[in-house]
Length: 189
Length: 189
Image (cartoon, each protein chain N blue to C red):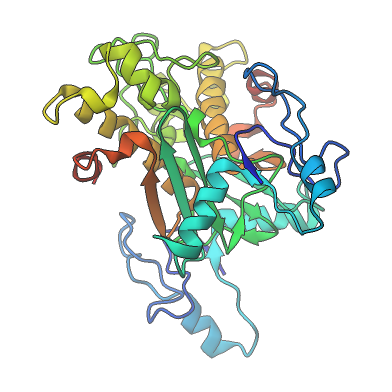
């Protein structure tokens, strides 16, 4: 079972398997695991949507054979997951890499950011909704030579630098709707 | 054996046990493990200085019993280490948390940063040498009510937010010369 977060991933917690507090209406405290456990007599794994995507990359995709990698999805939101020493990063809760704080030059990009919690965190500056809020149109309608892409590459690069400085992963994998734009990869590199 | 980095920590590498490229004169490519292995017939562990401090916190100090924590030292340099799922973060190389990129409001703090590589990365803004370069005197000579401390707390907080977003550790532990100033802890909290 993979879901948007935040989630209670601690098997010893009484609310294991639940979404915790989310601004998404009607989803706070919803128990995702118990109904499925009651309906099916099978082992159940439970994690964030992005960790599930990361595990799929590890099992079938770009992270095969690696012990340490990060998968970052850039779309409606931004999220990150992956493995360190072959294990997922379940610490106190789970990573929330979308809300990394990065340098934001207001002179070059006066957009205040679209995150309802932090304004100009990574998600606030570089997610799909940030494209719409800043440029008045979605990312997929902007031409390859639009200045949006250089700015996007800059913010994603700063976030990747922070992930590298913290985890030193063997590989970074980028996915999600915004990354369908092939031009972004060489700009980030 | 614990040393400043960057280090080759890969036991399968021909240069395992060596410092790699460092701006510190005379230390690049120095082999730290081999001479000790040749002199003493004992098992030898090898890691960064900050990971050794983190392991000491885990064995005897503030991280006892934890599976997931980060230790950050703020002094002449800034470095981070710790455990995730009870294991150290040895990925491609090792963490370099001192060089995290964080928001820097040049209007409020026009100091360009003291890091010879990145300018205003975390170490460039918040290390001991950054105090001397920005204020003309070392941190330990500044009174508790000096504006330096609020600025320092702000930069360290932004770095800790990034570490939390990436790793979700159970605990953050702060050490090093600059953190001898007790006033910093409540400001960061």
